[in-house]
Length: 141
Image 1 (cartoon, rainbow, N blue to C red):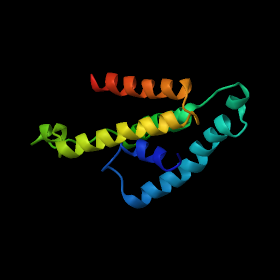
Image 2 (cartoon, rainbow, N blue to C red):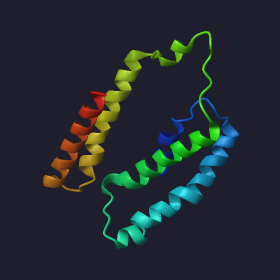
Image 3 (spheres, rainbow, N blue to C red):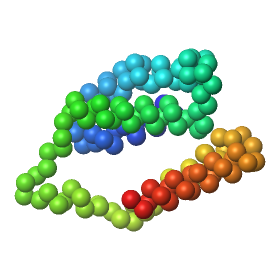
C-alpha cells in the first residue's frame, strides 16, 4: 500500500515537478501523513478502537492520496496550458494502451478486493460485486 498510494496522488501533478523535490516530498509525506493514518486505522489507533474496518485499504490509501493530491494542487497551482494548442491536452496519447491498462487494473481489482476477504464466501462475493459495479458506474461518467 505504501508504494501505490503516492502513485495515486502523483497523477494530480504529473509532469509539473522535478524528480528530486518529488522524492523528498514523498519521503516526508510517508512519515508525516501516511504512517500516522496507517496507525490510526490498522495499528491500534483511535479509528480502530472505534471499530472502523478498512476493507482492502480503502481508507488509508484512497483518503490519504485523494486529500494529499488536492492539497498539492493548491500549492503547485493550475496546469499551464499552451495558448496555441489547448485541445492537445485533452487528446488521448495511445488509446490501445489506455484500454489495456484499464483492463489490467479492473482484473487486478477483482483478485485484490475479493482476496482481501481471505475466504471464498459472501464477503468476497460482495467485494467483487462492488468492484464491478463501481468500475461500471465510473465508466458511465
